[in-house]
Length: 124
Image 1 (cartoon, rainbow, N blue to C red):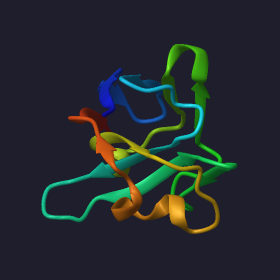
Image 2: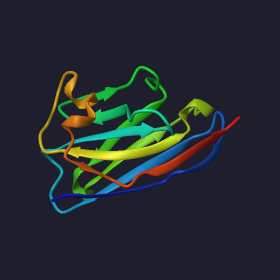
Image 3: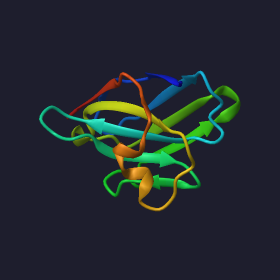
Image 4: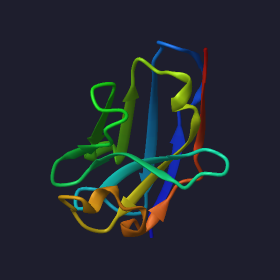
């Protein structure tokens, strides 16, 4: 069993930056794919970024967001730069019990564990 706890969300002005953290407990993360998804009211959960065999990004955030992981600390990060109001959402951390590649990391159904989410609000 893996427990995931996100932190780092908040309110930021357009053009600003935030760094989200996801601390995992229960299992070493070395062999897990770690992902970030986001969701706004009335919409499906949307893939943002993942770190499996490689790093994977949604087109909407490519070049602005960076995912990284520190296996020693069992923590994954999402550095978000050049934020805009369309990035406003609840951001969720997820873990899958295998290292995924290709299109698999973008599929929320492939993940086994989820955090509770952290709100990111970008004001214009």
